Length: 242
Image (cartoon, rainbow, N blue to C red; front, side, top):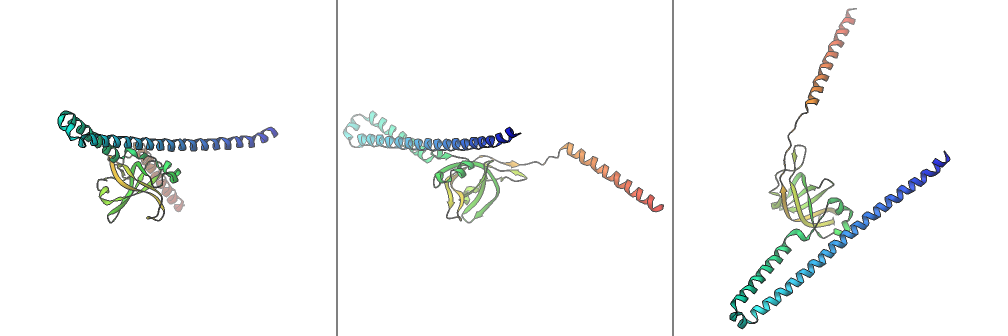
């Protein structure tokens, strides 16, 4: 018995140490993710700068030397075509939301300081009511872990047809916007100010189907209750006659 009592605190300490190590490993994983996102941002900046420098060189070679351009019209056309294609690809890349980090609600809440004021992409189901406030509106988006309030223009909520509740499954929406750890505009709440939205799956109405087993059980219980009430009243009348 003494050995068992002495071993218990050791096992508790070991459990606490393993929990602490797990939390440290999670923190290291989060730091690695942040470093990877920073590296991606640096690579993106280098790509943009290199592409812009090449565009400037091509433009200078085409427009600053017109004699060579008119002597070789085929090469000038190729230069211009390449410049237009490169500029269009760079603009499409910058205007698309792919440069933002796609995060879950748990990651945003756990690393609120890290993502405060940054553009993020958040996916989830629209739940509750759509609360219109003039030219803007509030919606709640749940990613099966937590729900985050989204502040967006009222014109962006026109495409929302279903919101999650007891009778319906809400639309699945992708939100691209600025994450706020404690929004000054909305009383210090955690929210996302959406810049664009995209519904990638429509919701639907939930059909209420009764289980046949439950129906049978309810019928049997009703029959038993009626039988007991009849027996009770029969025995009560029999006692009164006596």
